[in-house]
Length: 232
Image 1 (tube, rainbow, N blue to C red):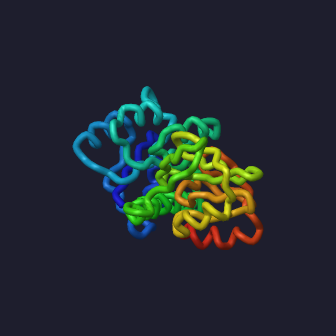
Image 2: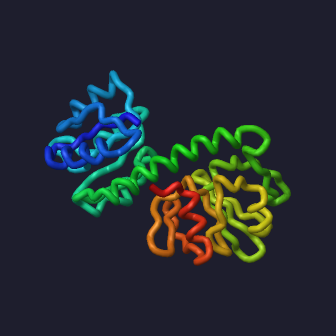
Image 3: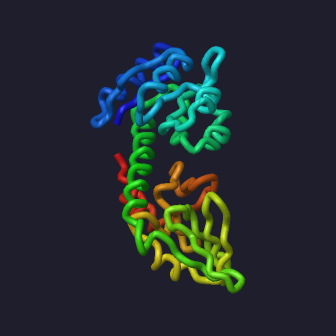
């Protein structure tokens, strides 16, 4: 995976560089102290991943993202904890690391990158007859693309199917839709929740963040989830 570093702090760049050099499958192709210089580089070159500092003189990391028409995957690095919610409003942002960056936290970010890769492969697998489902809502059959589903929640005699575009309230049981979702992409982590594992943002203790929703993990399901996410 080709990557670049954008950070006005030389020490921070050096630390990330050392972590990249020690990681198999990653190639650092350049580093920049100026976001403007990085934009010029990206106008002529393609990269897979950017390690991007938020706070830089005259041109912030968020300013930088907004200039890119088709941004690659981005891991934000910062000493400020207060911009995490704003950061994940950008689809290209994979993770948000608070400095100083540790080896363990770096590996966790790369794991999220791997999940996205797995999702791309999963999307290819479901292209065809199993790429969508139909649900009956108010006597209408509505088509939902399976990779777009990030969460299914049980609610009495109904289920709520959540996608980034909208939510669907369907008269059905959780185990019925569970049988129709591909097991390599979805996991029932609680008696009331099924998640798309490629949409996981963070896992901590006995909960998982999917999109912007924090969901409890059933005690018996935690080990199964860890196996599925391809933990480094």
